[in-house]
Every structure is written in C-alpha cells, then in structure tokens.
Length: 399
Image (cartoon, rainbow, N blue to C red; front, side):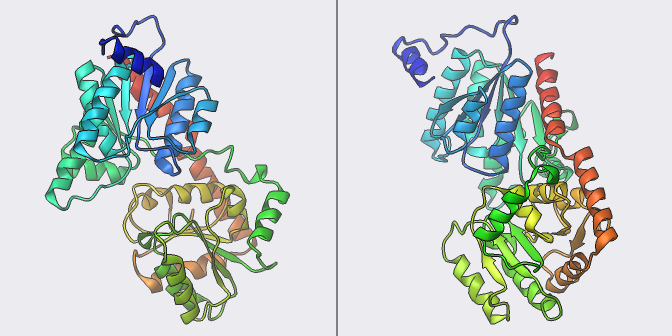
C-alpha cells in the first residue's frame, strides 16, 4: 500500500482513484494511533474482521504495533502512518496522506477511534467528500479549555458511536451532539475466547505454576495496566482489612509501564501486613485462563471508565466481579445479582463487597455466575457489537 501511495505522489495525481463505484464492495478505513494492546485496538481488529465477513473491504491506518499481524492474517490491509503523533504539522501531513489513501482505495467510510488521528481523518474525509464516523471510548477531560476544543473532533462524525450510555450522556452534555447522530454500542466480549468450557485444565495449571500459586488459596485479582488511577492502592488497603479474618492471595495482573509503582505497591502491602500475600505478575497472554484462577475479580478505578472491558470478560468466565459504582460498570453489574458494587474511592465499602464475594459458596456462587454469563451474552457480545456497528455503516451508505 505504501508503494501505491508513492506511485500516486510521483504521478502528481492525489485523486488517482475515481469516486467509489457502486458496483464494487464498500471500503471502510479505520484510523487509530497504533495497534499495540487495549480495548480500542481490540475493537478495531474485531470490526475489521466483521467488515470482511460481510464481503466489504477493511483498511486500517495506524503507526503499527504487534496486533498488525493479527489484522493482516484476517485479510485486512494495514497502512503505516505516524498517527500516534499530536504535533499539528504531523496531523496536517497525515491528513494529506489519508486523503490520498481514501481516493486511491475508493474508501466509502472513514472511522476514527482516537482524537489526534481523528483530526487528520476528519480533514481527509471532508476534502474527499466521504462519510466520517467516530467512536467515543471515554469521557475525555475538559480542562484546560483547549482540551475541549481538541476533543471536539470526536463529536463531528456523521455518526458518533459511544461505548456506553454513560459516555453518551457525557457527549450530549458537553458537545451537544444531536440524538439523530448518536449511537450507543457497548464494547463486545469475544464469547468464543472467554468461555470457561473452552479453557483446558492444562492451561490453568501451567499459569498457576508460572505464577507459583499455592494450592487451595482463594485468589483476588486486579487485571489491567498498573497505573495509579486503576485503584491498586485502594484495593491493597481494603484487602488488608479483609485479610484479618480471611485467607486469600491478591494478584495484580498487568505491567508497570510507568516504572516504580510496582515497588511502591509491594512496600505498601508489606507495611499493611500483606507480605507474601500480594504479587504483581505482569502482563498475561492468556486472560481466560487467568480468570479461571480467580475467585474474585476487582475493578477499582478511581475515575469512571467509559466501559470497563475486564468486567464483562470476567463475568463471561463466571467470575464474581467487584467494581466501583460509576461509569460503564453501572451498566454491566446489577449489585448483588450479577456482581458487587462499592462506593468509588471508599476503602471500607470495597472491603465489604470483597467479603461478600469471597463468602459466596456452592449454589449461591453458581447462581451468580449463571446470571452474569447470561447478562454478558445477551447485552455485551462481540457479535452484537459488530452487527450494530455494521448497521451504522449500512445506514450511511444507504443515505
């Protein structure tokens, strides 16, 4: 693809491709900073596969990353551009290159998933006269005031997709997007991957051995990147209170990308009497097996998350989930029925919910798991997310 763009430039014809032929399959271009790991990247690959499954053509533009291989293996094309840059001159240059790509490949719809590349994509789509779609993945911060202007591009889509009703309310309140342009499409859980029936005992045993977990000790798990706003310190403080009369091991599953936080957390745990009962095990490439090892999964974010992907994934695996009662978690958990909620930022409230989850036994635990799995399958599946996103594309293509 890069070679084709270079040939187009050398020919001096940025509009080398004519307007999209209606007899040809539609082409959808998704734009994001990079294809590393996370909910945005996962959703991009899932939608690309769904586009291909409908006989259309899927393109993705990003700065690259380890998920490019998975994307290309599915049959989608990837174009490498420095879309992870926020520099104004780079955004303008990316806009020119995206416009060339749009014309060259007869792109029908441009779908932007992050702010910096969205500015480039919006400029390119407007110049080329193509449909522009955005996905709001979070309630972006509004301070300083320049931030609101920077965020504004995500509200300029012909259709603005929000990953939860919480995010949709934020968008309507702060950006005044007309309801006719707004679509709520929650993130989807891959129910083929996150299915307890498909996780072999060997996978679980291998992971337990790698992490050196003692037999018979309940596991409380905090999945996700190790950052302060994920609430690891809050969880350690709550766990210290619960540990006075209950035995369990506290695991943080995720890497310390900022450096130094891991040591702080280990020192805090030791100081609160959790020495030997708290561990940071780093990134995990088999989260379904990890969830099978967990007796309780915790989402302790200090700030509301747009959705909270690990909640749905853990529920799909039948694990009791304890989550802060704000953001997208409120749409995934019915307190006491499909999981447990606690007051955000409150140590004692989290400790109470942890006790409830750890004390589940036999039939009560099985019943909660059954309700949680059914809730995810009905409302938060990858298939539903893909179908509803394709309906948005189809809506635009049909005018």
